[in-house]
Amino acid sequence: MYQSIKRRQLIPLIAISIAVGYCSFDWAFNNINITSSYFIAKNTKFDAPYIVEDYHGSRRRRLSTEEDNGGWFKDVPHILSLATSQPSQQTTSSHEQLKVLLVVTSLVQYDKGTRGTQHGYDRLQHVVLPQLTDSVSSMVNKGWKVDVYFVLGYESLENDRRQMIKDALPNGVGLEYWEDAIPYHYANTYNKRPKNDQTLNIADHALSRQHRFVLRDKLPYYDFFACFEDDIRITAEHVINFLQLSSDIKQLHDKAMSSPDHLVHVEDESPPRSQRHQPNDGASFGNDVVGDPISAEHVKRLFPGLIRVEVLDRQPFHPLRKSGVLDNHRFVKEVPPSPNTYTTSRNGDVPESILNPTICCEEDEPGRGKLTPHPKMNELVLWETNIQATGVRKLPHPIGWVAVLPVEDRSDVGSWWSGYPDTYGESNMKRPRRIDATLAQQAGFMATRSQIQYFHDVACPGGFLPPFDSNHWKGDSLQRHSVEFWSGGFQLFGQCYLNRILPLEPRQFEKQLIYHVSNNKQRTIAAKKVIRVQDFYGQILKVKERAEEFVRK
Image 1 (cartoon, rainbow, N blue to C red):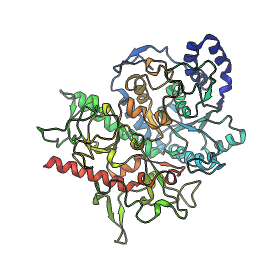
Image 2 (image 1 turned 90 degrees about the vertical axis):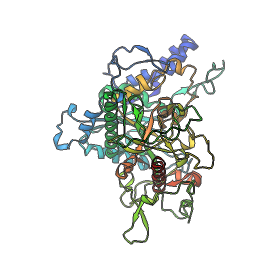
Image 3 (image 1 turned 180 degrees about the horizontal axis):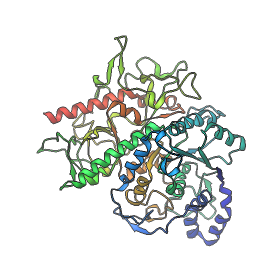
Image 4 (image 1 turned 120 degrees about the vertical axis):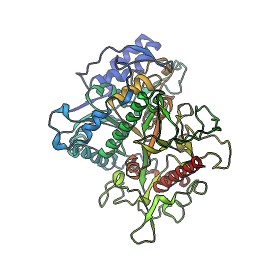
């Protein structure tokens, strides 16, 4: 079934709001998209929400009246079971299949020629559809029931373009789309009234918020949600890895809750130390946490992480393929990659990474769109973070050693920072926290239904879903937050207190890499920010080795 909605359907509601007056208009306009999204799922029914005040001092409408019991963990075992059962074990009954909704946010059909793109290039056909068909096909082949929802920044999706999408998707995959979904706002009015003669402007950056309205509508009808920008490839392997790690975290939580002290311990726990590093920012822990016990409350803050990567293209004169450019990456002297990152090649002369690029980035010849065919591991690069912003920690079984991505100081549950004690030349250097260049924004997120409920009801001040009318959002004219806040993780991994972890086992680490298929960052980002994935992984292993040595001593 194919359904669409357009913003112009809402003009009468906007007019009514204006007639009521500024205060009324402010509420109605910020929440107008809730009304719009009801056109999409006309049979949707919600229990009357009720207002609660959480421990952040923020009021919001809860999604359910159930008390938090294990929070976002509660539906993970069942969903993991559905995800990993063989297709032959599943019937055609919808309630026995894993139901997945992919929400794709797409600003333009044709590239504008900015940020290393080619003006007029058919983005929908050559960038969006290849990765989308890969994602959906991988899930359908597992026996999952998959639907796709497009949140579109352009005014209309013409019939021939809609048919192109329909033809590309496997049989049985549902398609819905929200045309002209960019909201309006009063520019430069954060915490102040609009001027008397000020007119509304289109808020392009806030298109990234609109998937939240889709989630609010669709939450009762799917088990799992993946909401990403239109050029991110998410496969069934990524989803299963996410669910498996979520299940592992649930095991830690269960162990902690059954323990008298509500702590879960590693098998070879770090010995007591009389002198511990004291934080020099707003964190509750110093930078020397290795194998320490972790509380049930802090386990609930752990969340599976992802890192965007690209594959170097093979066009002539690539600036990053010049001799030595990627070899001399940032902090290579302070944190050289561990030799354990590499294995001897078949020829016996060139070391090869123990990682494999197949899960995230495999592509057949000749390569569709901007994709590089049959990539080698030393062609995978990242640019969203670096080793200076990264930590490691040994968590109890079944997780083990993990990399810890950047998080706000107040949210940190503890890890061994790569800069401790004086790796970068300063004995009391502040750890990089919520910095745009190193936050490792991942262009989206995935979650189960109960995880999203946990985001909204418990974790995120002001809530995660509409109507965004609590005091936390007061005065927010959509000017306040960027694309990265809504889709890239600045909210989830800052305000919502979640700590992203990346298990370091090689086969698992590979499934935490997601392909940015536009493949344009490599030619627009400063070379000093780019590093090979295998070298970054090697630096993480080096930090792990240093942490182990410190504990031994």
